[in-house]
Amino acid sequence: MFVFLGMRQPEAKQFNKDVVTVLKPFLAMGIVLHHLHAQSVYLHEFERWGPLIVGIFFFISAYGLSYSLDNRPGYMKNFLSKKIMLKFVLPTFLAFLLNFLLNEHVVDYSFMKHLNTPGGPFFFSNDWFMYALVYCYLIFMVAAKAKNRNVQLYIQICGSLIFVLVTALNDFARNWWATPLAFPVGAFYYQNELRIRKLVNGKTGLLISTLLYLSVLGSLMAGSALFNYNVTTVLAYSLLPLLLVNCMIRLDVSSLAKNRNILFLSGISFEIYLVHGIIIDFLSKHVELSGPVLIVATIVTSLLVAVLFHKLIIACQKPFVSKFSVKTNA
Image 1 (cartoon, one colour):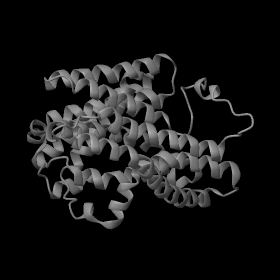
Image 2 (image 1 turned 90 degrees about the vertical axis):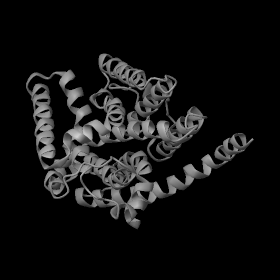
Image 3 (image 1 turned 180 degrees about the vertical axis):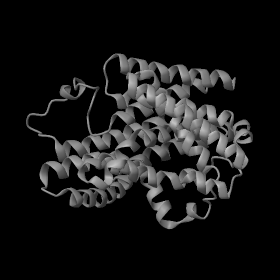
């Protein structure tokens, strides 16, 4: 569908903030439906969407970080405290508390059971992504110290590859190691965006690049399906975002990016990801609902909790943000 839409405006544009703003609500709701796919036959298609959506999140994160590093002076100042601790560690801790209150038995609670979970540490639903993202941000922080852009990219590739190998060799669940390499792919795309846009520009460029992506991804997925090769699985999931990006950069979404509902959902997309698994666990355990009703209840409740969670995160961040602002002004 995106390919046909792209044919109407074949000029390859920059992968900019408007595209990201429009993508984020659909990605957030897509991951919710992905985790609810077993509740209705109409959602079975969403079972396949998980890796693509998570890969896009990794891709967007690396692209945005690389762009900010080049275009915002002093961007790396207080990066650990402002970008990692406040943006990810604090919300993850709050999500853990929310899950503790809703889904854990306080009396016989054991912190250690989460560390020894088969498939990797598991403190609340889908929390692996937060740990992987924090790791990728730390690797980016290290890479940013290098002056040479190619060296920065090599550090990100090697760092992400170490994460993939360590989690895969320790028998962590596939979600841990299948998509993090999409992070350096996002950095690579940013560093080579002008050259890539020239290659894929126009109707001919769109068709050839799309066919090329589909051929490569099809071959990799076939290797995974037929021979159970983990290497091809990692490569396929890491490169999948490029296919979507190749189509999205043709679309003019500037007016859609200003839509009030899109802006609202984009603003809480991160919180939707954080809380929706906790809500699914809570409703499944404590409320008897049929599949379709559970789907609706999960979406509505996740949106409401995401709004409250967003406000809570901001309230908890305010004292620290003010402190950093005073230091910067001084």
